Length: 228
Image 1 (cartoon, one colour):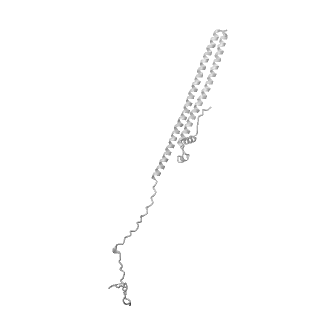
Image 2: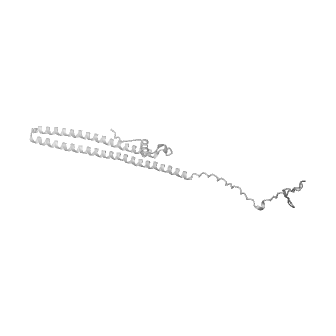
Image 3: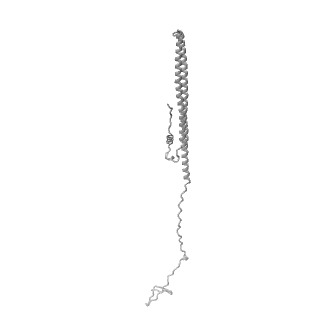
């Protein structure tokens, strides 16, 4: 059975990073994703899969070798036991102390060889397990590195966008101020001087005396005042 590991797709990893940073995805339209990140993650997974497939093959072979060696060991034990019993029987020693000693020696040898066989298998499995763990660690470590780089790229992009917006705001032309209205001064009114005033003298009025006798008019004449 093939060893599996977390293979979250690059697009889901990117979406998780954007959500974790609290970035509005609509602000990343100009960013255009990150093909480098996707390629790195895909290559990381593929490399890990290749290694895992190789280790799975080694594990299967190790199991097959163990079973084959165990089968051979059991067959040798059976043959050795049969040969021993045949030899002892020919000598009439099937139930003698020598027979028991020989059988015990065979059993001890079988146990030692079986222990060695199991130890070889267990160590092989441990080595393969360690190698597989290294692959899994490499996937997590590599993915963490690439995610960190992608996060930095996002932050750099947003910083550049903010700086560009600030620069555009600073370089924006200042609207021309409205031209000031001209100040209209009230006309200066000159006071008339005495010399500029034409004096008008009332005309002298001459009144002729009436035909009355002994009376005078009450008007002033050039020759004096005539009384009434």
